[in-house]
Image (cartoon, rainbow, N blue to C red; front, side):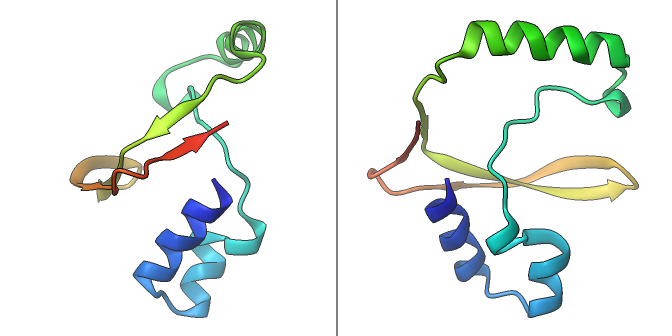
Length: 95
């Protein structure tokens, strides 16, 4: 995940301010967002989901990544799909 993230940031070539604000680079923490309260889930539902996910996803399965999806913010905290970027056949496995 770190290598994929670094390659994406390098391909975009943002300025240092954008890297620090949005892309984190060396501070990047790979993660998969399963839900948020802003999506209508309660804190209790998120806690239950975290426990269930940890039980069902441990050890973490391999995930093949064949494309990146880019979203555009159309309103504050509202996003729509902008484009999908297909990755080369040497898709990154996240394990």
